[in-house]
Amino acid sequence: MSNYHIKTVEEYHQAYRRSVQDPESFWGEIARENFVWQKPWDTVLNWDFTKPEVSWFEGAQLNITENCIDRHLPTRGDKTAILFEPNDPSEAAQKITYREMYARVCQFANVLRDMEVQKGDRVCIYLPMIPELAISVLACARIGAIHSVVFAGFSATALSTRINDCDCKMVITSDGSFRGNKTIDLKGIVDEALENCDGVEKVLVAKRVHSEVTMKEGRDHWLQPLLDVASEDCIPEVMNAEDPLFILYTSGSTGMPKGMVHSTAGYMVYTAYTFKNVFQYEEEDIYWCTADIGWITGHSYIVYGPLANGATTVIFEGVPTYPDWGRFWQIVEKHKITQFYTAPTAIRALAKQDIGFVEKYDLSSLKVLGTVGEPINEEAWHWYDDNIGKGNSPIVDTWWQTETGGIMISPIPFVTPTIPTFATLPLPGIQPCLMDESGNELTATRASGRLCIKFPWPAMARTIWGNHQRYKNTYFSIFDNKYFTGDGALRDNTGNYRITGRVDDVIIVSGHNLGTAPIEDAVDEHPAVAESAIVGFPHDVKGNALYGYVILKEMGESRDHTNLRKEINQLITERIGPIAKLDKIQFTSGLPKTRSGKIMRRILRKIAAGDSENLGDISTLLNPEVVADIKKNVI
Ligand code: WTA
Image 1: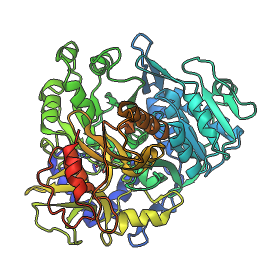
Image 2: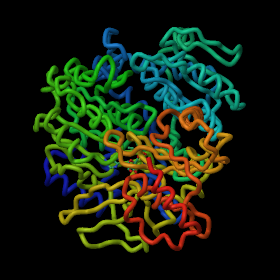
Image 3: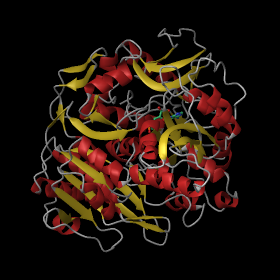
């Protein structure tokens, strides 16, 4: 067990060294000693980054839900697995024990089997942050169905694209969702999406808001009556180590969102191991991650990682602003939260409010604070450290991605040092490197370049659903024999990493990855728009916000630009979701282009950031004259 839980800096260095020198025995031992397997593996690792093909624990058989639930029953049956905190603070919190989880997951799994969902079938889950979300995820895993959770803030169009891409035969949703003082008509969104999804045979609907919804005869079924008559035992499907566990979509710099495919055994081992160490989870702790299960952070560090460790994990339905800006801290006090994991954008927004919202509550239960999703600036880091951690709770700035499945670079609290704005050191098993633009590895300790990973780790995504070539092109073709992250980073002279941000056309807004291409496509759908280009610009709460340069078909004076801006954002909301709305829209007569017709986003980014003095040489552009015009009219 010593191998599993790192408690001293010597143990960290020892584990790290071993994970590099002998990765197979390192991971083999962790996997053997800390999980239940129906059949052991033949080989720990097979890999070839040129194809790319990676398999971990080949030959093994298991079911991840036995590891997340069944095996805890003898020792933790009455322990709370999920602590549900509703949107409305006056509604009682719910504690679901491991024993109750077992029954509820089995019942749900039996409902899925009754509806002829089989191993390998794809099931789309479009639910708010209610217990049914985690339970349906686990129910899919129980029977070997591949879940594809779509964040319930995405629009009908975004939902239908994701349903069709991986050909889901079922959608699990609810009548609606509560968010702050709003009620959202989720079922209506699903109905609209399904007008374009012929492959969906069944829709299961959980009741949450008790609104009137239309139920389509034969297709739509209320969930609860089916659960009520289902058996509380369900034999888990036997899964091969490399069988897909789930698909989760993430934005690319171009084209369709990418359905990242994660497999079973490696993902389980790695998320459990990193959860234990990065949060230094102990048996009595109450762990809360504020992410939505619709993102990878929720998959790995609300559901699978915590439950595999027999932890108590909080599911919070609401928002940080309701009923007021003290909500997070009220929950910390109420449930005596020990680990609190959130996004820098939330910290920046909370830091702007009256400190009275923090001071009102007793936060002394906290031991570890975490951040994820985007770089954290120094000011926000210190605010978090001083006001929330009171200088006593180390901050784990965790760098990772949907593609990596689990945390890759992070401090280990009380073990390795924290440094403001640095994700610091790679976790055992992770071999990062920095590359220059011509593909050479930067070997000096102190360096700055493109962040790559040289060696496979158990939780890495195995492919993009239906498009292995795109997986290869995006991640394994830019630098030979290395996984390219899309991020830039610098390494200090003691080997600590600081992530500097995306080096591609992905923009991270409030911690959400957005590709520019689909947003531009939405803008271009407006009948008045001829062409558009979208870039990010620094924003003090969101990290980045979106700036749109839009060429109209007719630039006439008569058009009401206020309305036009609203219409454009409305289109974006419909096509993608409100998270992709543009903060600023500048109407322009042209966009700077290279002679081969490529938009020079570098120039647009600088102008949007208010840095239009140092645009470099623009004389080689196809149309250098538009630059002055754009500079003059910047918003
Ligand atoms: C960014 C979220 C700086 C990064 C788990 C990465 C970060 C992208 C950090 C992945 C961090 C994530 N510091 N940047 N601690 N964590 N990022 O797929 O650009 O939603 O490539 O996964 O977020 O976002 P994703």
